[in-house]
Amino acid sequence: QVQLAESGGGSVQAGGSLELSCVASGYTWETKCMGWFRQRPGKEREGVAAIPTDGTSTYYTYYADDSVKARFNISQDNSKNSVYLQMNSLLVEDTATYYCAAATARCTDAWYLQFRYGSWGQGTQVTVSS
Image (cartoon, rainbow, N blue to C red; front, side, top):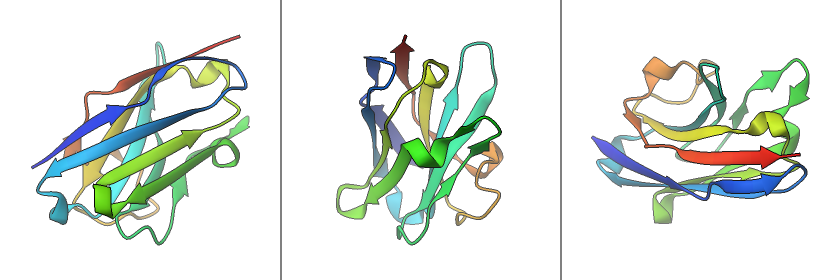
């Protein structure tokens, strides 16, 4: 089992930036894919981005009216057992609790399916005000 701890959330004005961090501990060698998910107020949890632990590729959610990929950047540092989510040009609609998750299965185009992830962090709140 892998334990995950997110940090970096907070309150920011629209247009601002935040960087979320997630530190993994425990059986980290079993982890193949790390993901960031979020749960916006009144909505179900959804995928934001994912990255394999070797950092060879990245995956982002595409919304019809917004490009997360253009504003967010996921990265990882194996030496620190950490994954990051740099969020720029934040929108009020980005307000959510953000969760880090770890999967023993490799990242694929189905990375956003939450059942693939066996370990979850407790979440960190991001609030964007207008």
